[in-house]
Amino acid sequence: MRHRLIASLALAALVAPALLNAQAGRATVRGEVPAVQAAEFIGREATVCGEVSSARFAETAEGQPTYLFIGGAFPNHPFSARIWGRDRDKFEVDLTSLAGKTVCVTGEIGRANNRPEIVVRGARNLRIG
Image 1 (cartoon, one colour):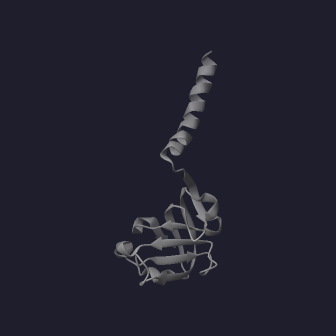
Image 2 (spheres, one colour):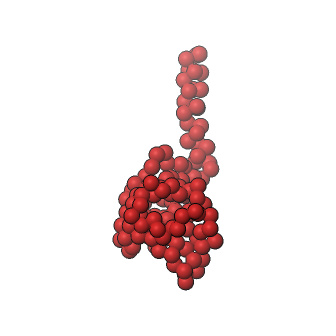
Image 3 (cartoon, helix red, strand yellow):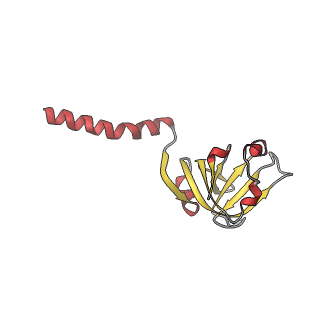
């Protein structure tokens, strides 16, 4: 009887964190995800890393976003990061200067134009190098 109780408690300790993540509606991916694999984790919180192939400030587009096309140049990129114009001043670096650099972005992986994307809202969600 005592062994069953211990086994049940151990199982509950293992299962509880997974249930909490599921209840929160968002599971977190541990470790870094290569840009080419980001599509496998749509809807999950993750850190996606790769080389910025090109960066573009869409000054005349609604919301004035800056795009970091990671893992390939637009329109053949497997992943992108979007920084809205209203958030651009939260970064100490010129975002368009990141082409050729390796970056990691953290956030929920969504989908834009049928490709995985993270909207980066602040400097803490962007790591360079």
